[in-house]
Length: 127
Image (cartoon, rainbow, N blue to C red; front, side, top):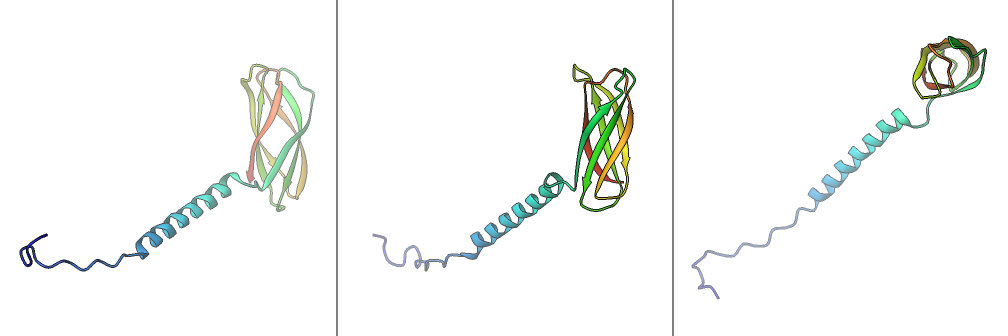
């Protein structure tokens, strides 16, 4: 089809670099694993399980809350409480210290600006 020698000699087919896609795949997998571990550390299997066991003496200015916290270790913790009224507006907030032990029950009087309808435990962390 082409005259011989006019366009130079044909190149030998290049050997495929099979390691490049494999290396890219390994990098993507390592990045995905690192992201999964980071997200699991932040959102998965919390070290504290806290719940409001009961409320007493609920008035327009305060509510006495019984808080139960289960922990993996016996270090003291700090839990955040939030009180909301029937419209969902926040009427009270506090950080409650929780003593040492793996299962601790705490009574705390939460100051509020109006009568609370619900009291939530937002989170707990090491004190």
